Image 1 (cartoon, rainbow, N blue to C red):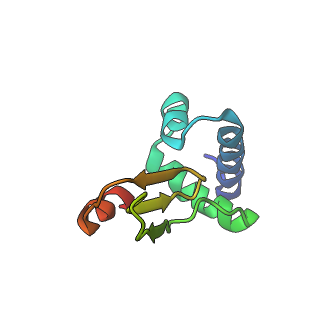
Image 2: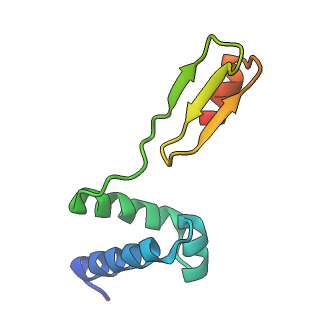
Length: 97
């Protein structure tokens, strides 16, 4: 049986392999046959131990009053969603949740 520290080292090594793979976490876990919830648990430990900033859970919401854009969502990865017609707050809430 593998020691707790040995398993931690193995999981941290797996996380570093995932980071270099360019795949999503779920895709990488599927390829490596690792349960996603276990990977996610260890990724949180990895980030805490290595002071790694993951994408923010918050999304900036900017409401425009001009006729050009009614709302713009700036996502943590730099992408933008611009709405050129009025959208309900419920619709925006569904998108970011």
